[in-house]
Amino acid sequence: MTRIDPTSFRDINPGERLLMGPGPSDVPARVLQALAAPCIGHLDPYFLATMNETQQLLRHLFQTGNALTMPVSATGSAGMEACFVNLVECGDEVVVAVNGVFGTRMCDIVTRIGGKLIRVDGEWGRAIDPAAVEKAVKSCTPKVVAVVHAETSTGACTPLEEISRIAHAAGALFLVDCVTSLGGMDVPIDALAVDAAYSGTQKCISCPPGLSPVTFSPEAIKALERRKHPVVSWYLDLGMVRDYWGNERKYHHTAPVNMVYAIREALRIIAEEGLETRFARHRLNHRALVAGIEAMGLAMLVPEKERLPMLNAVRIPEGVNDARVRKALLTDFAIEIGGGLGQFAGKVWRVGLMGHSCRRKNVFLFLAALETVLKAEGFKARPGAIEAATAVYAAAG
Ligand SMILES: *Cc1c(COP(=O)(O)O)cnc(C)c1O
Image 1 (tube, protein in one colour):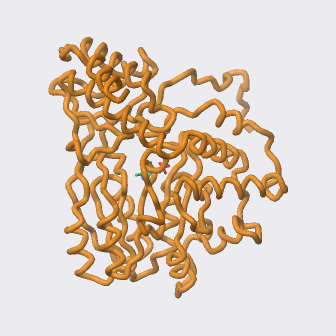
Image 2: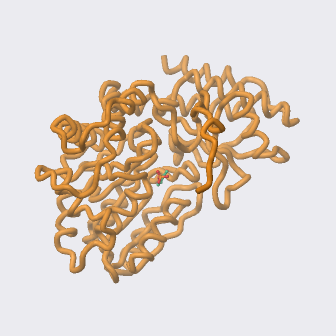
């Protein structure tokens, strides 16, 4: 047996960061406190009540009456996989709209489970065109039509109303990725007639990564019950997970007890703030950030009307080194932002204003820090970023 010296491992102490990337976002102290509460048995009456309350709070955030609403015990990608493996069987036709990394991931999953993929490719950095989805839907008999509401890889927002109508007109289930949108903008599941949706804890819910809230409509549950073959994933089979989170409390797996405390607290904070207030806060801070960015002479990737409030993709100016700027922001200012993905690697920065990170003081701190770092890079930002952001806040009253 090899020996290791335990004293060579120091205490975990990452220090403070300001998380303004594509997730995780800053976690409020109250959520960290909840995470540190005593771990109890997952069938303890106290925990069962906590599970029920978590589901109630989740239904409020999803704006749904769906009975099957609960956090899957893994990150957002597991929620994505759970939705597809439960609704898609080998040979089923599935239309997936792709305008970034996460739509691409959906396609990968559909193919792996033997679904027949009909892929609608949209331009990265733009919303999906509903007419393109309609054309694809009419070319087949889709069981599911899937779209990413908030493409975190580009900062583009795809409106859901029209695509929902197209999916239902074709008799398909409507599946939505709201990992980045949920908690930062309106995602009214029932009003939009969404049949299956998943999210993640570490974006606008501002809880550490580790859970994926999922909701299934009664129609989606019917499709699940009408399956010809068992769900190919044992862990993500919502038929069984449902009996664990439902009244039976039939043991399936052990819920990550402390993570459930944490999301419950994060959801309680959201309910205290109020959904409308929270969404308005995201829109306002986004507008102030964009005003500052543009005042500096930098450009946004996504056209104004298609922008997400919580994920801001900024074009990296010619001659400026992507990695050096992000490193300087982190080491000199303890600010984390994200780099570009796929075709935008090295081309854009992704600046998050998610949940608890989405605050006026952070907008100012980021603008000032970026200006300073760009100056050191030899890029002369135009003056007036702070003033431009201030003007947005002043006009909002
Ligand atoms: C972050 C994200 C995911 C994946 O979530 P993980 O928690 O990283 O597994 C999926 N879809 C979108 C739109 C995301 O932003």
